[in-house]
Image (cartoon, rainbow, N blue to C red):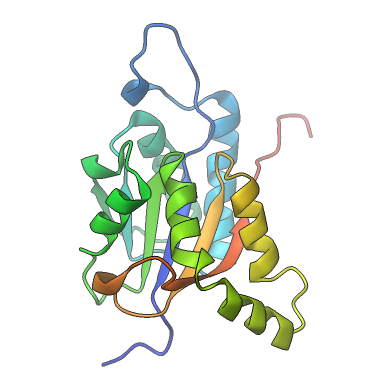
Length: 193
């Protein structure tokens, strides 16, 4: 049975990390701001209606801690795969991981690192940009895909969330096979505000 909506890929850059001395990159924890922002990213996913049915998370401490703070905001517990190949991956390597997603998965959350997360979003969406612009124009959406794509090109900050609608099967993911539908950089409130 075919799903009534296209599969969605949600790409989340881990929340702000700390830089403690003598701690290897893979073991860096979240900073105080990251611990505030990660739950806000979870609330953003819920607001977008993007509760994943599969999470592919880097094995780095900061991505695992980000996930631990996102999941309570979702109202569910999707399957999580802590995937070593996501740590330090290029866009091409991330595409290889994503092509292995089972077809029945409709919303997949990828939690990773720069520059891979930004590059994979741009790779998937940029060649499809003309289609996205046409959709935004028809719907009268001045802040549609075109502006979201420009923001992703400029910067993909910590806790940034990009939502892409796929035009085909996971196994067929390639540059230009998705449309960027949303991009946000959720921030949690500092104490006392």
